Image (tube, rainbow, N blue to C red; front, side, top):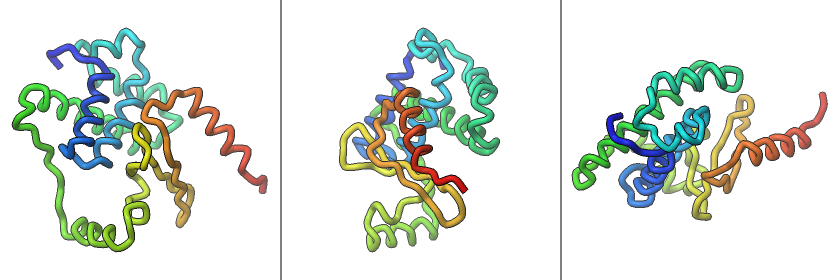
Length: 179
């Protein structure tokens, strides 16, 4: 990361790439969620100049700090997504006219696309990837709670703070029934 750039620059790029169709919206949002989480361990000063940060060191800090909040495969995936987000950002910044994002196309995803046309956008998304919402600056995200049960959170702001997330968590705890 030779060039100076901030976390805000990186997140703005992901929004831009999604808005302009440079990458699938769900991909951009998944990369943004991982970026916000992983880079959330940085101080405000460190967030202003990501180019001077040791990315693997930052990911290790995140893993150490948030190990109890995620399973090991999720920690690895967040690290992979942050690397990908930064690589895409740097590629776009170096040559915006020739920027492209490689996406996978398989027979399964082509069939899924046809199912999405039939079922509608909200019914066909993967429970593991956020989907766009009707409100600008927000997204939907789904979480499998147990086998066969997926909860979808709607209209989450892209700049959700930890205080707001804690408030949401407390509200959800209030809804739980005691066995």
